[in-house]
View (tube, rainbow over the protein chains, first blue to last red):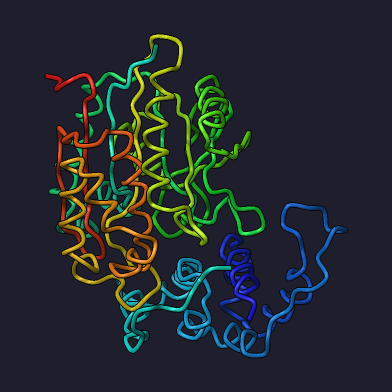
Length: 119
Length: 287
């Protein structure tokens, strides 16, 4: 499990308008590109300085490709990051608050304690 | 020495700006009542005649990130740009720029370190809606210099609730020991019960009205001991998965003082989360 890397994906996509659209339109391509190019980038350093050890598990990659917010929650991805990015991608297709409510209803089977989000 | 002219604690609801500025069919039915409560709240700051604002809030993964996460951070810069692309996108918040009060930042850093808080600092900090929301509600002119102080209520492991209270007490003492005759308002924002990205989000009320009722009572009466007796890092998961933001209210209870009743208390039950507003006047009630 690499909750940190899931969060890093959500964080870096959410803050970039171009990546938000790219992930909405072509999640498989975006996730593959991101893992190859971005996963090991140190965000506060020049490109030449990179980490060497970060990659998704198969389940994590699948959850991101399928844009499966329930599984991301169950994996312990930070719920604020997931919610913010998914609202940016999908609220536009729904009426006022309709998407936010459906997002929560899809998780109605989950009970406390929720998955640990500590990284 | 400086005077703490007001201590103010508030929720920070990013939907207020859009709700209060929308018109016609776009204006939500609760907007007029919300605006009336905010205008009364704003008057409590105006009446205190502040020169400087110490602003306590929490970065929502904007500038502060998991590769280098401070627990408590003081901004020390002549200016702070404010609000981010995803806050424009989701909440319609405007870009802003606020002046910094560098000398007070330096004073809080030096003497905070000496008082046992290993404060991080930032000389280039773009602040987010946890600080700009109370600027919009309480001082929309955005004409006063600020010292932003960020707390980590967001990325575990978090400091203990008691530490937030102690930091609030320390900030109060540090402001009161700042040489000069400035009038300083200490303003902090947090949450009552709140769920974000979980099954209890965006309900008819906040996820735990019973917690909200107790929380408002603790804050309004300054019941620091009662609050610390019930609130733990574990217990805050129960009212909603984003309720750790309540610890910023606990920080403000520390700044207001143990057992000190708030001079202004108001709340508004909205969908998703309850709003709550508190003002204390350390100099005594202002007319």
